[in-house]
Image 1 (cartoon, rainbow, N blue to C red):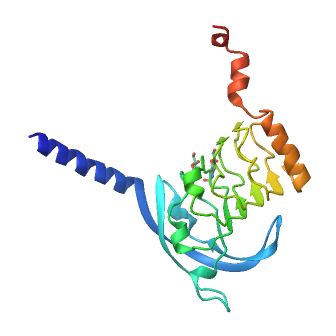
Image 2 (cartoon, rainbow, N blue to C red; image 1 turned 60 degrees about the vertical axis):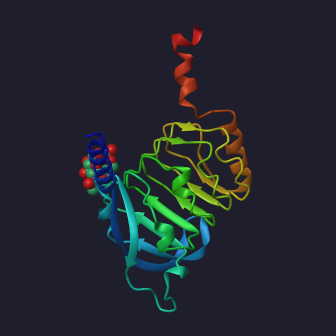
Image 3 (cartoon, helix red, strand yellow; image 1 turned 180 degrees about the horizontal axis):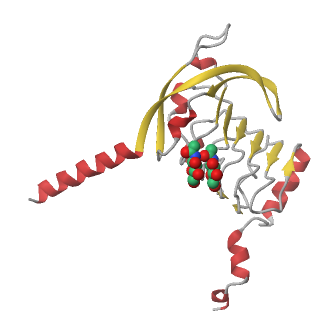
Amino acid sequence: MKMFVNFFIIILFMSAIKIYVQTETIDCEYNKNTWAFWSKKIYYCSVKNSDIFSNKLKVKIDGSIGQHLNGFSSNDQVEGISIGGATNMTNFPSNIENVFPNLIAIGIYMVNLTHVTSEDLKPFTKLKVLYLIGNHIESIPENLFIHNQDLEVIRLDFNKIQDIDKNAFIHLKKLRTLHLFGNTCTSLGNADNRDAVLKTIKKIEQDVCNSDIKTDENSPEKEI
Ligand SMILES: *[C@@H]1O[C@H](CO)[C@@H](O)[C@H](O)[C@H]1NC(C)=O
Ligand SMILES: *[C@@H]1O[C@H](CO)[C@@H](O)[C@H](O)[C@H]1NC(C)=O
């Protein structure tokens, strides 16, 4: 009987995972162009069927269709992926790195993405440009970019960020554009050169975006 129950639990667990992760193929329109705040041209896939992400907890990308531009023949040459449009993306998509192994630029914008984890960004060790503009991201934890030491451009403008860990950006020695305008924490704007980025990082070190501290100030429990 016990064995039967265990078996049943395993089956239940497996079907839950199946519902949790859904596999989809992306349909690419390829372009070679500059991205805002990144002057070099990037060969990138602009995802046409972004609706594949709607109403799914986690999407695993198993491949791509779409015709490469003249002079390009392989996904190894793709340097960027851009996902935007009418879709609600709950979690950062997985397995992109196995479809496009050489990404230096990722743009996921205006799809109401609520959070990103360091595990999501871990495969992209060569990442230089990350756009997450116009989403619903609320916090930037300490180790979010720990695997992405080459980042030069991060755009998080127009999210709902209220918490930024003091050390979130400190280790990114190449960062020269950091956009944080239009968030719940209004103390930070957009920085477009290394000096301005260092000033922003200094402000963040002083904990200007920490919702705990703000609630603590008014919280009577603090006195106890
Ligand atoms: C994002 O969420 C807002 C509500 O907060 C909604 O109005 C908007 O349509 C959503 N965006 C997309 C792309 O569905
Ligand atoms: C996304 O979700 C919001 C509600 O949170 C809804 O209003 C909107 O229509 C959804 N968009 C799409 C494209 O499904």
